[in-house]
Length: 342
Image 1: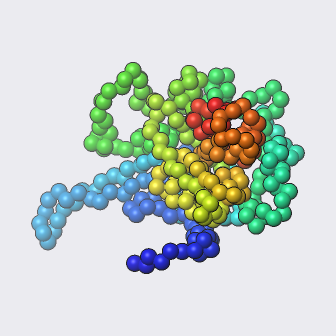
Image 2: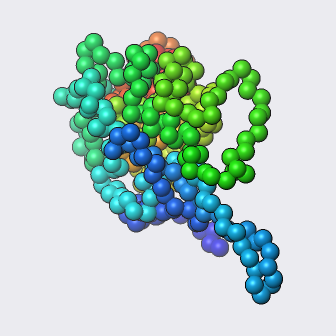
Image 3: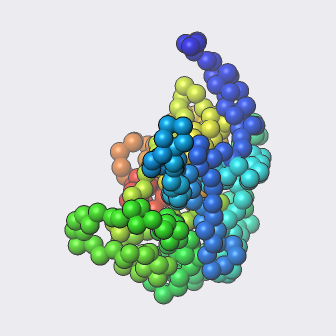
């Protein structure tokens, strides 16, 4: 095994080769399935694990086996876990939620970036080589409207996102026929009352009551809806980040793909370094390539003044820039650590 340390150029070239040959891949003995919802465009991905048959008798020369049914499980890998999906690394992922966002008619496209910092960086031609090309026009709520899943929940509206989540949280249990696989330890509820089957209405009620959140930025339409809350499945976060030592979009995208293939529900960017706005932290590449939530810490990007928490505006500028690009900066997720948002 070679222990030769790669140079920064070699690391970036290796990551670029990984991206150029990127395609959907299923785990061994697994296949991607989709469970349909009430609408044609609600198709919830699951990983179905094929089990080996059980030896039940017979002889050495003529063994008898009993087939075991496949087990569906939660799958965070998005298009990267589907061998039948063509991945175009130049355009990013398909915009799963865009039709749902458009159908609500409560947001509009901006004529330009609202963040002065982003406009300043875009005007710098020297950064073109580092910048992701698939930039989207940011959207915002129409005056007098609110575009959060919390708002919809408290208005009594069950959104497609909520139905998607309900199907996902059930993990295809209705497909399991064997009683052995349907057994569940009673455990201790600690006051929680969980239904045997998660419904879209249950998802809505939990969000409206403040016991769960659905991070669903309208500027991240590629995201597959998920929920975080005490009455739902445990979620896993993966930390990634470039640094002053090595920094490129290619390397960050490679980390993102592996994080979600191995089960990350959210990805936290902890990047440092000179060009993090163009590479990991600020770039649309992170969002455009991801079907999971992308989060970041804001205080690290203060551009002026003391690093102490203060009510200054630089952090607010960074937060505006991130939200325009589709990042999750919700204080309820503790993803935004700047003075103005905390």
